[in-house]
Image (tube, rainbow, N blue to C red; front, side):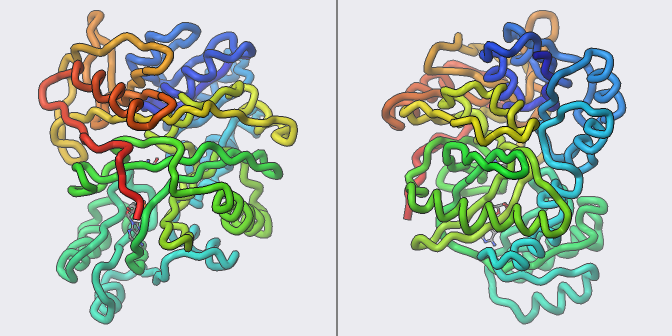
Length: 422
Ligand code: AMP
Ligand code: GLY
C-alpha cells in the first residue's frame, strides 16, 4: 500500500515509522514531515503543509494513495476527511462534524451532558460582561476555556479571581486567540490524577489502545505553564482492567452513540482526557486524534500491524482485528526549545542524537534538515522513547540518551514517567 501521513510532529514520525514496518507498506509519504521522517527507510517527505487540504487531495489523487492518516486536529476540524471521502479516497479520521468534539468545547460538553457522562460542571458564555459577572459568584480555583482550537493555549486553570478575569479579558476582549476565544466556558476545578484513554473506532467497532499518562506542565512536579505535553508513558497503573471496561462502556460507547443520534458516525482515533479521583472518572476533554506525545510510547509497545489496523478502521472491519502489546513499559521524554511554550528561536544545530536500538527510538517533533545537519524547527523538538520490562529501567535508558543530546537552550523535565498516583 502507498500511504500518506499528514503532519510534522513526533506523533506523525511515530505513526509513519510504525507503518513502515508493516508487510503491507510500500511507500509512506509524510506531509510535510521532519528531519526524522526524512531519515527513515520507505518514508519520503513531501513539501505540503498539513492545513493545505487542496494540495493534499491533489497529491493523493495523482499518486493513487491507498490510505491517508491524519495526525493533527486542524485539518480534521476543517473537514479533510469529508473532502477525501467525496473523492472516494480512504482517509482515517473523523468527519468535520465529529471533529467538533475537539473543535468546540461547548459542543463537547453538550454531548457529554446529553449522554449523562460525568464531567466538570460548567457554564458557557459569548459575552465577556456576563462571564465576568458569573465569575464574581464562583469559588477558586476555577478553569477558563476558550471554545475553539487554540494549540494548547486555550485553557487557564486560575488560582485567583484576578487570574480568571485576565483570562476572560484576554480571550474575549483582547482576542488573543482570535475567533477561538469569542466563546468560552467557565468550568469547575477538578482534582485527581489525569490519564489519557485513546481508542480507534471504525464507526461501529472500538479498539481501546494501551493506556498512558501525559505530563502537560512544563516543569518538574507539574509546575509551570501548560504545554502540548513534555513526555508520556504507557501503560499507567491508574487504569486497571475493571476501569478500562468501565471507561469503554460508560464513557466512550455512550459518546459515540450520542453522536450517532445527532447523525454523526465517528471514525478514527478518539482521545479522552480523564480525571480520576477515588475511582470516580470524569471526562476533562476529548481530542479527535491520537495524542502527542502519547503516540510515541504507545506505538513503541505495539506488536500488531498498525497499518492493517488503520486500514481496517477505514474499511469498517475492526471486528476482525485484535491488537497486541508488548509486556514492556515505555516512556517518551520530550526535549524542547528554550522559551517554549512561549516565544522560542528555531534553527539551532542538534548534536549527539544517539543511534536507535530495539528498545530506544528517537522520534523527531520539530526538526528540519539543512546541509546534512539537523536543526531545531519547533517548540517540542525530539521525543526520546524507550521500553523495558520495568518502567524504571526504561526511564533510565531514555534519560541516558537525553543526556547525550544538546543544542543551545534545550531543556526537558527530569521526572517523566515518575508521577505519583494519589
Ligand atoms: P484540556 O485541554 O481541557 O485537557 O485542559 C488542559 C489541562 O488543563 C488538562 O490536562 C488539565 O491538567 C487542566 N484542566 C482542564 N480542565 C480542568 C478542570 N476542570 N479541573 C482541573 N484541571 C483542569
Ligand atoms: N498530549 C496531549 C494532547 O495530545 O493533546
